[in-house]
Length: 117
View 1 (cartoon, one colour):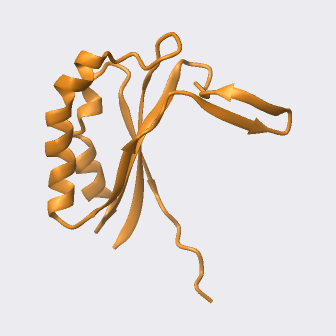
View 2 (tube, rainbow, N blue to C red):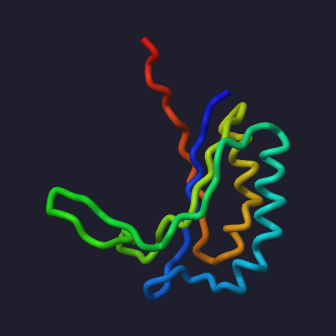
View 3 (cartoon, one colour):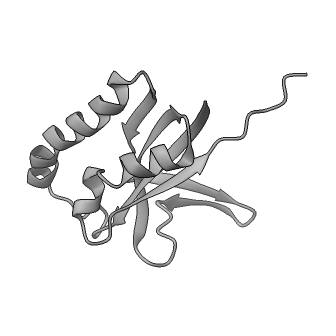
């Protein structure tokens, strides 16, 4: 079984996420069901939302974040899981509550294990 990192992205507002507290409250049951289905299969490793503010360290120094990538889209959370195939993770992602938002996306990245010897 391979491990995967799912990055949840959405457009940001002025110094905050574009989603409102009401949106987040209304979305929570959908997230609980979606994540719960992965957990029931024993394939959830970890998941968390990510705080809006951050620090960016580069060769040019340290600045306040987040990094919006020039298009006002930023990472809002992540999920670490394990799955039998890329297609399995893609199927889960098609039902992710993040996709209700016009700019919401799920980026799927497989993890590469470090050599053990």
